Length: 540
Image (cartoon, rainbow, N blue to C red; front, side, top):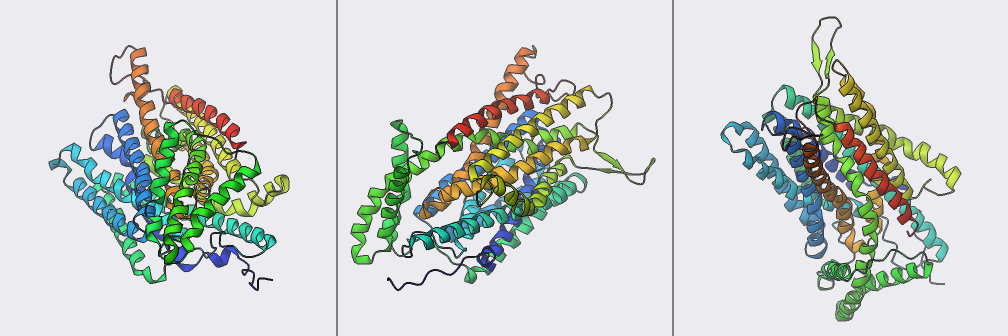
């Protein structure tokens, strides 16, 4: 007998410690600040900056894409050279400075060139690029669950512990998403109303102040945190370049066109686990064995690249979901601007309450907040009876369900837009609620599943890179969306004989715009992506 005691039972409630809950609250405040700016940005660009609808939509999509892509760069730096806490510190300061710059621009916009607006916006992108993935990985580090590779214990104990870890991680990511959706809800509802009715200066100043307070609160709680960079704090020479070497190997494999899908053979998976153990175990050695550890870590680097390459097919198939994910901030908001968004107060000829079109984005987060607690209490038990799986459905199945719901949302959006075009009078803005709610429900499945999938499919030393891979789906998806708008604008304008601007599917004239055709086009592309996704899932 080894004499080692088995680890104590892990319960979900015990692992969501105060530091972990604190970080979830900080993340929700950041979402309030970001959504307070991003959700109504298209309205600001069209009404104040006086950009065309298509130009404003492309600007918002490109800015959102850059914001989501930058975590790939900052994650490599955080995992290779810095630590997560330092990355959060530096990026949060840039974030706040960018928000301050945006507020000042809104107050002085009559004296400022329009092109200078994008300087504070992209400063926010740079700050968020390091802030979001590092904060999420840092929050997951606060879970006292280990990494499952410490050795010891019999096979039964190991299997039970691994199942408990999986449940705790799933719980964390669900409550993380619940927290950021709560912040998004407040940002969408309150800030869009303030911006449309009171003024843009105050509408940008409030998110700035709230973000600054949350950053200060995060720093004040520093003594409570486990500032852990997994297994590598005392052996930095072993760790510094491991991620970069893995990425170099990845790029070399791409250049050689050696991308392979995971084998369905269990022996291949066992080899991967063994290779990852070779990568991490040397990091536990004493300083006198450091040279040997470096050699073994370098030998294991290609296996890390192999894992990232295996994620790329799934990553690619999720891009169309990311394109659909951008519609509420762009063309859904434009739809609302073309519809009747006044609600009579008191009936008859009384005063009318004007609903900011961007406020309907809050229905997405309301759907998420209502469904998230029900998912564990109702969806998981019911699906477990059918599938026999502990979580009801697997992570990839969860992602697939959300993809189907996003396709249905696009079909509903197309039907509503077609009805708006046929309507003699102005259609009520509440006709848009079904498409928003469907996207909210799809987010509960797909986005939460994506977070867990990309976090758990990489070694512990690359968890920030895993979160960045998840965020990069939305970054590249935003660029794809901007490209589709440009290509379809040119094609449809030429087809209508417009020869340029103002005609086609994205015309500024509501009588000429055909957003319904654009939504059907996105639904078709998403169907193709879903079919390919289901095929690829057989190999995971």
